[in-house]
Every structure is written in structure tokens, then in C-alpha cells.
Image (tube, rainbow, N blue to C red):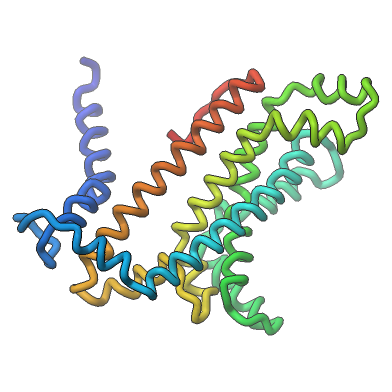
Length: 268
């Protein structure tokens, strides 16, 4: 075995990284209200409390509306941007694409505060709508990154053949291009949905009096008796995130295989 110390370090690092996630379901089903070992017994009471909490249901509904809207808008904008980036050349292309991708490297706290100042300055009331605006800004670069891969993997000769056969650019995009990149579109939707659902900082600054799931969880951490229910909620969120990311990766790989491209890495 080569480099045993490095292998041991990698295992310890992964254990440190994923141990909190592993502990979530353990304490979510623990009968005790104190998050500590030894465990007291098995219970699903915290999941019952979670289902009966009306404020939590409101936060979940808001988060689902925000995540679904953000995913649709971000993916739509991502299709336009990825199409332009991979098929056309125009003045300032590199700078424009770089500006669109800038939220990937900007600290979210800076983005959130800037949006808050601008929105309040123009008289926009903080609500679910303002959170959607912020999440679209954050999710669009991720959508573009996914869709760039899908469009780059698409053989341009298919589109050229469609033009030669008399199809317009719109009909070619609708009948040829879009179906072939659809796995990438679905992957972008799922990834944007997951990012928006889990995002806290922008929601904290822009939600106003409308609770979202991350802000609700943060508000409940001050109350020790609510911690077991939060652990149960976290278990559900982790399971949902894993399912969504798995589906997104499946469609990403399916899209690469469908277009004959090369897999350069993914989410899983």
C-alpha cells in the first residue's frame, strides 16, 4: 500500500467532514431531549412535532416557492447565457460571461447586503419575491456552468443539418437542440432548487417577515427543547438533498452519454 499516512489522513478527513451528517438521524430518533450520548431510546416523536408545527409548514411552503421559482428563472437565464457563450462570438464576450459568473466567487454576505441596500433604496418591500431575486442571482452561475457542458457536448453538425433541411433557428432549437440538452436542463433545475432551498444568508437579509426554512431553523436554535425537532428536520433535508443531487448527477451523465461528450467530473 502506497502512502498509508496519506490514506489515513483522507479517511480521517472524510470522517470529520461527514460525522455531523451521520449523527443527525441518530439523534433525530433519540428519545432524549439532550443531544449527547448515551442514547435513551428510539422515538419518532420529534418527527410528529415537526409535522404539527404550523410555523414550520409556512416556512417550508415559502422555501419551496422560492426554490422552485429560482430554479426555473435561473435555468432559463442559464440556457440563454450558455447558448450565447458556446455558439456565438461578440464584443466583450469574456467580460460579460465573467460578470455573470461573478457571484460564484463573491462572499454571499456582500451580495446580500448590496441587494438589501439597493432594494430598500428603490422602495421595494422585503418579501418572498426579493428572496427569489437574490437566489436567482446566486443560482444562475451554477446553471450556466452545468448548461455550458451540455451545449459544448452537443454536435454542432446536427444543428447545421437542420438548417440545411429548411428549419429556422427557433424550430431547430426547439426540435433538435433543446431535447438533446434536456438532461442538462433538468440537472440545472435540480441543482438550482437544492442551492436555493438550503441558502441562508440572502434569505436572512431579504425575507423580511416571511420565514424561510433556513431562517426558521436558525431562529429555533436558541431554544434547547426545539433542538431534537431541528435534528429531525435536518435529517429530512439531508435525505432530500441527497436524492435531488443524485437525480441531477444521473441526468448530467445521461446527457453526456446522449451527446457523445466526455465526462470531466460531476457532483458525485
